[in-house]
Image (cartoon, rainbow, N blue to C red):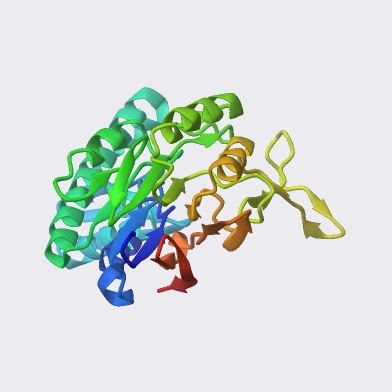
Length: 317
């Protein structure tokens, strides 16, 4: 019989270093025995900090210009940028002009900074979670570049759990971080057919005699965990009666896998505004949502005992 286990689960921090540091401290703070991260760890853009003279720098953040000097002022500005999920990038006016004119050059600069930051985060996670003795399963999500999977695999304590069956204190955890097709054409997307094939291959490795946990970035279709703003083909929000319309956007293949296998717990993310829990058959399904832009870590605490869910709650901090 699997031992009692309390899991802290979170996802979708999108490069916010403030939120990631909170994630690393979450297990001892909430009394959890293990942490699982469900994808979308990296940020989405660079914020150039342009050198305007010896020791003088300028950057724009949320349409506001910041003029700082080297030292504490520059350090504070870079920290503020990282806290909001962006990457500070010290540069020159000439290089900014080159990035504007050459998308390939910009993509290369972004890729280098993203990779350097992700490697630093993996080192932090290894050191802090090993010191706390907290098992940690992590994976990339649909918004993470393919290089992120390689970087997570470099961890010596954290486990790159994607497309694997990982034992966690007697529970089998099956993880998959891709999403089905989105309007944003993110780096790691598959069709519904591709999702079904990937999950069939993964779940075929489960031992049916042992309790299972799903860690799938994409939520199940029409579950209440997948309600997103409805968009027109040109990406404008659809409204009705003066209110934004929401619609289910989750994966049918994910839902079918849950219905077929009936794991005791299914953990999801991807749709930040759809913080919710529901049951599909005997399976508790959870999406803790995301408020990374506000510097808030949203998560779910789930306690398992005797091969079943004993209790769960949403937490924010």
